Image 1 (tube, rainbow, N blue to C red):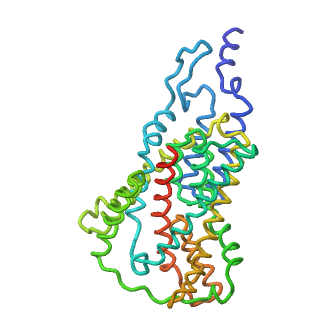
Image 2 (cartoon, helix red, strand yellow; image 1 turned 180 degrees about the horizontal axis):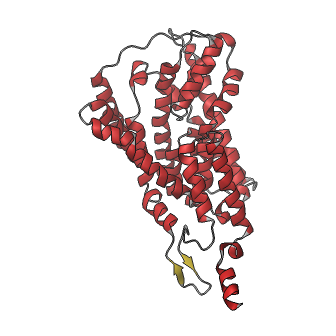
Length: 388
């Protein structure tokens, strides 16, 4: 009988708390959204599995060292702890993913129409507006966010998962799980969230505007541009250099044409491997004590506000630019200034085709879409520099 009691007390069922059970249910919901609904499955699947594993009591997947009541170390931390500390706390995984994204990015549409860089910059307004919103909620006692947490929440508005994870791991690691889930959820919901905002802010005639064909961009331009961006940003804002440095390095491998094997590895095998461990590491921060609170709901809500403001800002700036431009810009491409590459550009194209079946905006929208990646990295550097 005594042996049975020992066996029962050591079982996960006996040790399971209500919070852990609730978080395991959250993990299952994320799995459902990823598999059944197709919401960012490449990252939500490993995040969901990480959430399940880290909330299994006594399984050795602890996300932090465990101490007994007397303060003695009973476990140095499970597998999740080492994945997080080695890849996310150091910033390694998001940077490697940025290198892979750079290797998959074509700067051609941006270089062919440089003024679309402004649309990518405008979409970052949602980041800073949400930081102010989070600080205001704390000031009035509605929610309790530190300035570090407010900066991390604001980055969700850039719709760039790796950037959000990179910033949050440095400024507010305790809310990493909620920020990562919000960032990738809203990226997946781009086709649902953006079109109503785009239609509300534009007329039928504006959505039907046809843009002129883009000029050819030379290989030299494509090689020089990432180097120029890197040097300018690194000199002015060094805290943004890690993200942009890896992004530009990946892009240079793509455009140089002499390291195709390295470019292919960065675009495929390497980014896939790191995505698996990044997801597990994020899942390790989704324990009950860190996720089940009112602040988490606040993060999800503020993240949605940030994303909507970023979308609206890009559309409104495009409309303003049309008042001073000889060649009209379809305002729909302004919504692609958020960093959800290439989904936001596809949404701009889809809404444009609804207004004019001959209106193909995909390549035009890729300009602000790529600019948004650069803009979110710069915004991240600003946050780290000002807050850390």
